[in-house]
Amino acid sequence: MRLDVRYANHPEDSKHYTTEELRKHYLIEKVFIEDEVNLVYSHVDRVIAGGITPVKESLKLEGCKELGSEYFLERRELGVINIGGNGKITIDGKVYEVKSREGLYVGMGSKELIFTSDDEKNPAKFYINSSPAHKTYPTVMIDLEKANKVHLGDLENSNKRTIYQYVHPAVCQSCQLVMGMTMLEPNNMWNTMPCHTHERRMEVYLYFDMTEDSKVFHLMGEPNETRHIVMGNEQAVISPSWSIHSGVGTRNYTFIWGMAGENQTFTDMDHVAMNDLR
Image (cartoon, rainbow, N blue to C red; front, side):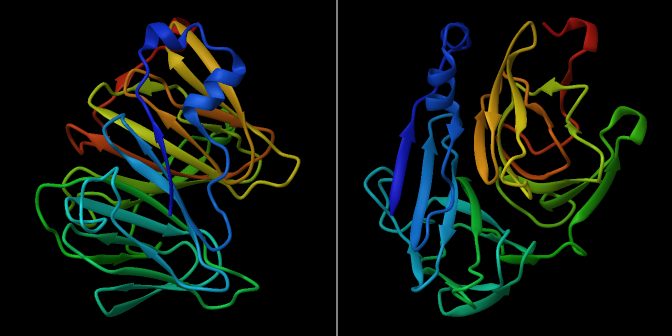
């Protein structure tokens, strides 16, 4: 298992970062690596994000020194969304069939987690978010039908999209993790604009469903001192609670968002007026 540790950065420091430094601290450039559990541990709310890509062999999610735990979910909870081919997740002997765009919430205390692809020529790509937990909640399978749907935006503003809330109080119980997927309709490129911050929660975005030559310009930073990171397909970005998190693509795309922090109230946002952005 690969686990890259990222430390938290003060907004005053981040103002002085070069493009290379911004990418080093916030961008997860390679999420999915064949036959690897490839994770990033962020000290921002101690969120773990990354990819599990079983191709020729099954992969286990295990404890490690950085977690100080015997097994991965000893004191954590987990959200998974599969963006690849069909696969299976075996949790303490129980097998869950997880097809493309299906998700799973796994509660604290599950000891053995094994990830497998049905077809090595079209492997599953399990994207995970994990946060510390204080209580065990039931493991729940979540597909697009079960996810809570929110329709936002319009064609006039190039941001017509559907939000699918997977790990969310309207769908299942969790300690602090909230996770979902947003799909933009064709000819729509903007997400989360007008933008916002939420000092009570950090956020991680994974952008995908992009062509090889398309890009997303992910906006971050304090509202009066914004920065951007140019992102490609299947790359993720860490957004501290003080930062905006918005983006525009050269064409439509899909992204998975995950949050952890003080509360789970999706609408608890500090909105930023367009004229206040700098």
